[in-house]
Length: 587
Image (cartoon, rainbow, N blue to C red):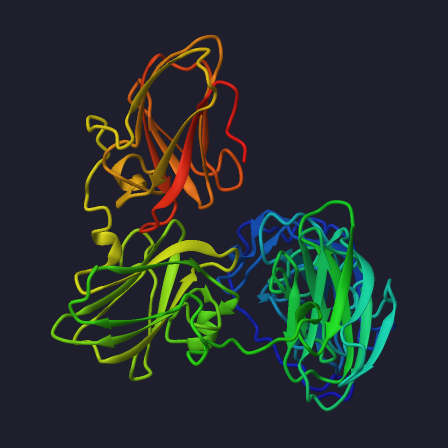
């Protein structure tokens, strides 16, 4: 190799191809030409061009890629000597090179060795004569991106005076943190302004998202032995992103890992050196205030504890001892599904969802010759985790149908079953019902398939009222609840558990006022109403404080059949029904 060559530069093999079909070497080059003789100075000879075009470079050869213009970007008449020849280009986007050598052969490259996504072609024992160069973009439709073309006898160059990519060498806009592993006052926080005009994937990684400035927002100079993981995260009221270049030159980025649209990067065995940190905004728009957290504890300075499901802890909703043949069947427990523990991280085995560390319920079961069914029903997407008496983990998502989980134990063991009911997605816990049965999954028979029957006599009688009635409200004390799921027995939008017969039948002749029907109770109750037109009208919390209420504007004359339900099954509760023309009942 010539002494003038850079070490480690690989040869790009010549690509022999036919004549160009769309690019035209006869056209004048777009950005001019130059005459060069071996040993030329300065080296490299560089020129600014715009990369890209509408013509597929594969027209020249099947080995070529990218999109170019019909005319060459640049041309040079070269008088060869004893050195090899290097042609390279540098751009913020993924660029390509197409070169027509003096003998008419075509040469192409996408990513040159040692220059990232920038292309480079090396000619060993180069010919003398006219070289025509096209600088393209790998992807179509990215516009005409500024780029630098470099011609050298020394090696490839990635210099780009037109770069608008994030530059880790620019002075940070919000200062520098000098930290040693095990640093005190953890987390360290820095107030920044997130956002910018540059796409975070320019010259970094295609996986990066958001918009940043050229200069980083923060430098973190970190030293130590790698005894701790390093957490970089950011908190803001808007959707923000993080872009980081580590001391080894690797690009790291994140969008929402620190939760609530906050980005976070956990760096395991962090290298010592400088971390350049950019605070990005996911969408274009005005910059937003944000806080960067630097920590060895966890995202946003929170301690990152291992995910764990611990069956040694007391169960959240109690325990039961069941002997095969138990009644009632199913045995049900109302609970709140979900938690902050990632079940897959805690258990693995394709388990899904989020649950609490402690079990929700446990049973000690004396088995016989029946199978054991454990399932859960919920308005949301629930999951199920069970630790069986032999210590094995069992998990399910949707086997009980309608996003409800269920696990069937054939030939079940005697002993303790610890049960977790989770939510598929992390977030607010959801009301759910756990079913333990020897007959089937709980949602297969709860409600028995019956429908609400307006023809049956009302449980608490009938009343006829006319507009202007007194006293107002007219009230009925009753017991809310029943065995039927209103969503199955009446209308899918209804909630709660009711009886088959109405609780109250109202015959109403309206006056000039609206009609209000509501419930007062110490428990969570629901309303199901079949109006004079036969429509189902339902409500859960419309009257406030878990009390249901339905407001009829311009009410119809006729019969209103009214059911008062409980949100949970198996929990009959005292309640007061109110019928009024003035408004909902008040406590």
